Image (cartoon, rainbow, N blue to C red; front, side, top):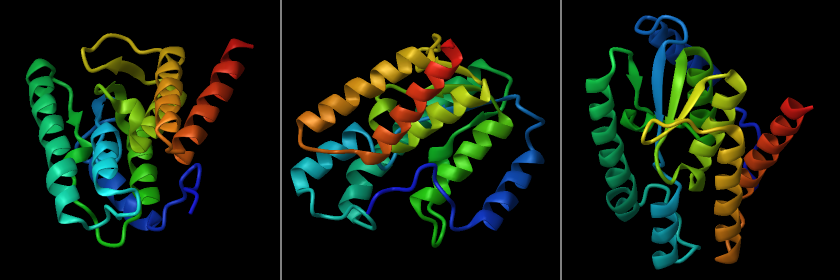
Amino acid sequence: MTPEFPPTPEHPNEIEILLKGLASLIEGRTAYYVSSPLTTGQVAYEWHLRNGAVRSSAGDAEFRSMVIEPNRARAGEYVRRLRHSTSAAVIDPTAMDDLPGWAQSDYRSFWGKVIDRYAQTVVFRDGWQYSSGCAYEFLVASQAGARVLREDLTSLTVEEGLALLRTALEECEARGDTPTFLNQVADALEEQATVVSE
């Protein structure tokens, strides 16, 4: 099944409730948002290689313990350090547990709206370009005009991000994987870069 692009949420009312909840904590676009691979990305890809592409990761206890929890722990550690170095609110999407019935389209839509409404700065942790969710967040952040930074807090331009994403796609395709959603994001970024340069 081809992932829908841009993602259409199945739970739009719940998304709006959560967004309003954030409004009680964050005023306007003043927050940092940290984009980290969680369920897709390099670690997830390597797990799928070891366990066979046919094996589903959904609800798999080993996938959770070998991919999701280590990714979440590394993200949490980075966010803690960042919170000590800034007075701004820092949003860590990996800290949110799974919500009943939510699909990837719900999470992508929700976090995209969080970036659009609340993030002044979006930090992309190393390896983000292998993650479908992070790649979509890069697209949204660049469209929203957020300040976009690498993990080391240096600037990351749309052109640099697109180059990283294209390289990741080439690597995936060389290994026999065709990440449709990543391709769709890269195409949208390419289109955006073309419009901006005209």
